[in-house]
Image (cartoon, rainbow, N blue to C red; front, side, top):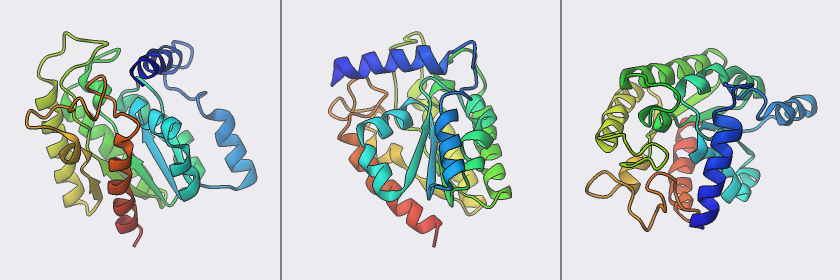
Length: 225
């Protein structure tokens, strides 16, 4: 799976995450969004995210179809890009809830760099947009990562992710939002991704998503009670 994962990673980042013609990724799911809206087949839950979410839907499509979920991950995207396309890829699909996972590519300094606090602000803005439109937000922790193979110069990523997650968790608690802690379930003692769970230290292996699915199903059930 390692070779396949690397090919998928760079293909996705090149075609979608870093496209100069469609920097925010509006075209990535445009046709499918239009189909959903036209047929009135609105999903129960939308998963908003980056390549980690995108691969989830590719590796485990049955998880999404069986539960009537919708994956809206775009490889390489930062939290700012997700915020800008949030209306098109989440609000317009009228889900009951949205699972938001953002921040990995901000920490990796994709395209540009923003302070960790801005990542939290962007997630907060997505939560506010969701609630304003009758959608229940669910905040995901950033999964562990201590090395970005596409930007190996980045230092201290593991600790930065821990700090961002703390602020996300605190905000979720303060605003009575369900928080899914993938990080604690996946990280080793160094706050890194163990090799048995990730080939590249950043993206979950296909079987690792089973761990995440167990966690998010509980979170969705709790959020929609």
